[in-house]
Image (cartoon, rainbow, N blue to C red; front, side, top):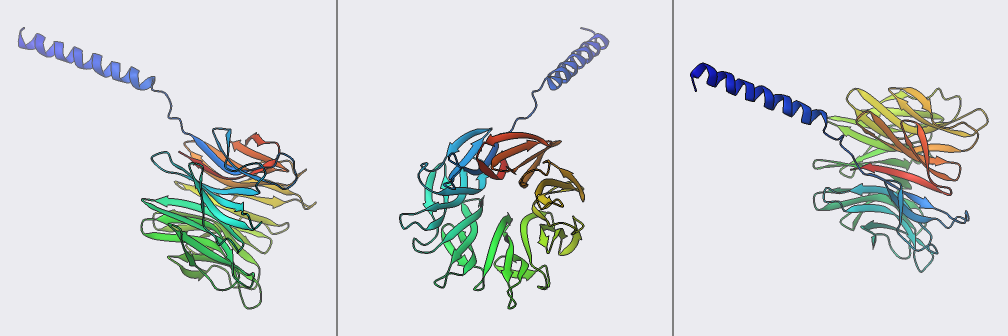
Length: 333
């Protein structure tokens, strides 16, 4: 083959390959993810809740129907192991903080003291869980368990609501009562507490997010839903009616907050704020809330409740997970 024809031949082959690759790319199936939701079901609507998680809408019950339990936080490891934390009533009829790994129960709290688990995160080989446990006097105290070993974050009445592990740093969001009995919004970083409010009005942190060097927190102070970025507060609501932010997600320049705001009749409306602008996900006829949310691609996934129903939303479209129950947390893997 002469050089000029040789070059033309390979150029033709290259163009053909590139066109083939382009066609293959055009026909690549979209990335699909599994959606995990933790919560509870209450088939008899009697308060005897049953810890449950849903995978792509299919329920997985973690306890027998006769045992009072609840699933709060959920985390799915890279190897597919599913961790769910919450509480279960023990043989002493005391609620006990616990977690399940692939359905296998591990108790965290004392068998004789009331305790709850709120959030679970797995980092490497370490399992972190935050919650509360009462002391001998019956006062609830904020605690964190690392691989089952408890550390008490405060000796004063206190609560935890969220947990973030970022590198070697562990952040816990919650609240602690001051000497006047007013809850102060708090973040513990590596077990060292800092205040986000001054203690003149009841406040609490419910959600955390770390993005690079920025720490976002959401919660409420008084009747206001609030967002803090690196300790600087901004208002999500006007304070005319009670509102609160429960979880926060950050994608690029956009900040999403899940929560609820009461209407003038005192009924909570499930809401998502994006960059401070609120979207209502319920009609204001019955108590509703968005308890957690996640962003994947261009889609916004959220979970919560509408009255007594456990609810999942995708881009504000509602799907019922259970006719009686609650959806507490969501994890996309």
